Image 1: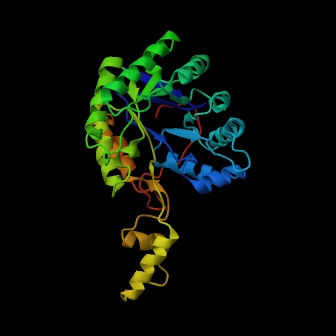
Image 2: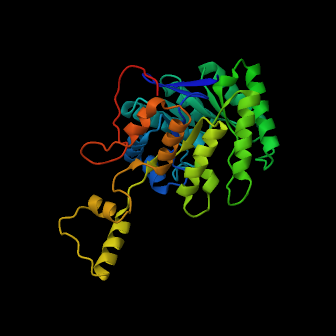
Image 3: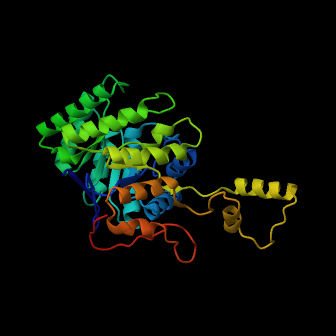
Amino acid sequence: MTRTTVESETKTTVIGFDEPFCVIGERINPTGRKKLAAELEMGIFSTVEKDALAQVAAGASVLDINAGVVYNSNPNPNETEPPLMKQMIELVQILTDVPLCIDSSVPAALDKGLQTAKGRPLLNSVTGEEDRLEFVLPLVKKYNVPVVAISNDDTGISEDPDVRFAVARKIVERAADFGIPAYDIVVDPLVMPIGAMATAGKQVFTLVRKLREELGVNTTCGASNVSFGLPNRHGINNAFLPMAIGAGMTSAIMNPVALPVNQKVILDKKEECVAKGVKLPENMDDETFVTLFGLGSTIPRPGKEMEAIRAANFLNNKDPHGGAWIQFNKPTEGNGEIGGRGNRRGRRRRT
């Protein structure tokens, strides 16, 4: 069976057909996050620290690191991104021992990340574009690391799943020319938004099966893409992930954390209570309040997607005797958080 090994200095994660589903935490990425981008330009890393720890506590077994900030002071990412990538990787490696996924479209940033990361990180990513193949595949070979292969090329992203499969095959074959085995390639078949393409779900399930059976490769995806632009995205994601796992998908780049309820939501609800004449105890804390009214939590905790993944692992016999499922549903002593397990540094171990 295909096994893709990703390592930190002390910990090993295996992505594989017979392994529990691998969650690659996506939160350390400034794309679309203005606050984080501004912090990084100022050399502030507090959000990176929080995101790293919260994602590991929620169940991520690999952390994606993306330093793609366009600085106002210097809009050239070829100059700014490599040193920022180095700083972010060094910080995250101090905070946690999970393996890393180095994520960039800037060649120099990929190289700097590979120089900095300890162990055997996952490289994100290579596409079927010729210039990308010619730069990234030699890096993969040089550092002996696995790589995410995205199924688009010089012609863009095709809506035809057969074309996307052909691009994946091309990347696997070109990688073989460099001596890179198929087990070190994790294909992203590209999940389309179901709101824009009604067949998007069926397409990716068919593609994943074909990639597994014909190319023998592991697979990943940006899981939330499927629900883009739709209401109740978590509901769609929760259905999509177990179905993708059932089709043979072995990992996903996703947010494992249910984000805390913000203060505005809490204040608005309290004002609503006052307006309706609902009297609350004066000493009621915010966590008790949001729990009482079903608003979520004031602290980060595993999202519903993680619940769906854990259940799918159990149902697919990738969680013997349900040990991980039982542990996931145990309240953490002291705060009542579900699945809020801490992180320990130590000798290399499997996840």
